[in-house]
Image 1 (tube, rainbow over the protein chains, first blue to last red):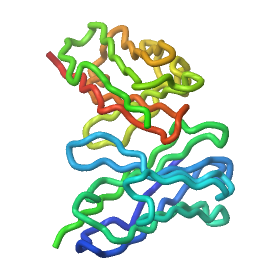
Image 2: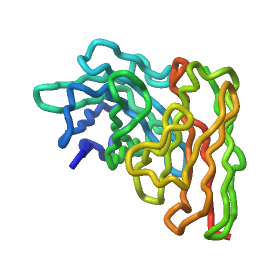
Image 3: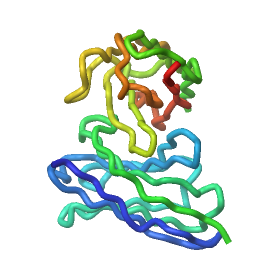
Length: 119
Length: 108
């Protein structure tokens, strides 16, 4: 079964840091580019970051550039997102999503992990 | 960045009716690289369409996509109970990728 499972969410104080993880199974992880997408409570989807299948190409949305860092470990079938300088506006469900290496539509999605930034 | 405007915001229909959802881009979407996703309450998004009109694996043929350039449409020919959800378009032809604000299809 194709599966992505996110973890690492929780309650963090403003200004804090966190690392989210996404574990892949059931497909050849190294053949997929990966993304992080978030959804604030009651809101739509916001793309955050992209990393190529080999970890080569990396892109960020302006809203998180300089604060968030995406990485992957193909040997461990895992994707990561390091979040720094967190603010209340980062409160959201964070999804990892896989895209075929030749494209950028998101074919595979995890169930999400919830981050709440609050004092 | 390419802004995607989805309309209507909410569509109230009955099971068996036809649903027509619109996604309009602020500039031409390169390659007509537009995807549609379905999100049921409490669930993650699910890919329905890519390349504007190609159904993803396992998606029933009552879902169809069309359009090019700046105007795209998702049509559900006959609504089933499980189709009542929120639908998002996403363009991936221009950088950065962007999502529309969503259309909620609710039971009338």
